[in-house]
Length: 319
Image (cartoon, rainbow, N blue to C red; front, side, top):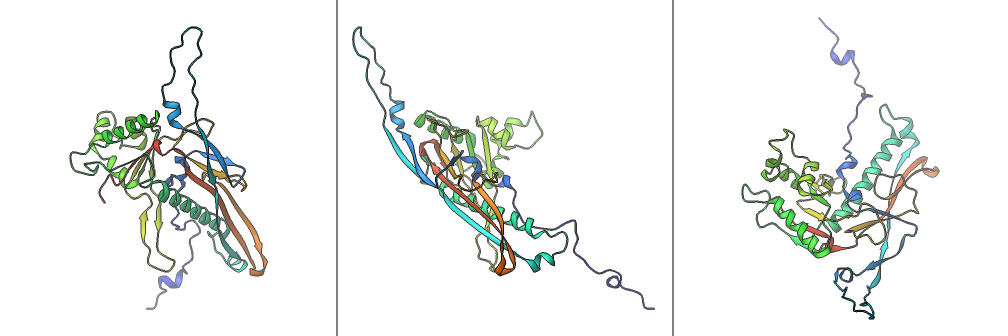
């Protein structure tokens, strides 16, 4: 006897309460959090730098009655910044908008997509230029990798790095930036686990790591990039690789304040906030295309101010 089939009684439609998009959340990216941001009114300009050695030299002397005090001074020079403007757009045709089903929202989706792209660009820019060797005052690879089954001492290695920065600058690092591969090793390492196994059943977090190390913050890089061209098979990799950076970073920009780096953000662009850069998202009509264009542009210049305030661990864990 003939009966209606499942496909006869139901026509598949797009669900209006879910969709799947591989967007990465803001907290996966560390670039806006490592260096303090400095709003600048000009796209490029100069800033003053003082010679560190002059401030660390012991020059005060005993003064005999009726004699002049010992004289001294310091050297002053300038350095430059140049905030580069990055931009990207996505067009939304009238036909696509008119024909879109729920839950699609072409305008909101385009804005989220472009914001993701700019975050990715900023993270790759910071990582490729400052989360690498030959940038900071010291490059080091532990004699026993932190991923070794036994014998590794990540806390002692990190403390040694902090002492090196203190000796060379008079300032202690206050931030540790680590890739997720490094974090996944450290959070299970006996050096950290043994500190808390009798006081908490929770897993080791970045806050607990910072407390043990005497740092203000531990930042974990967990952003992912696809290095393949469009249409080719995707090639995914973690942006942070297998490295770690100790750095002294000022809580906010100010005069006569040492810091490992600054992020010069050009205020010539309207700021929407949240990315450590002046970012403008705009929508305007492209009448000849019968489309609306959603465009994002952002301006920044990450700049090492004092390389001696950073200590870089190159590949402290195995691949």
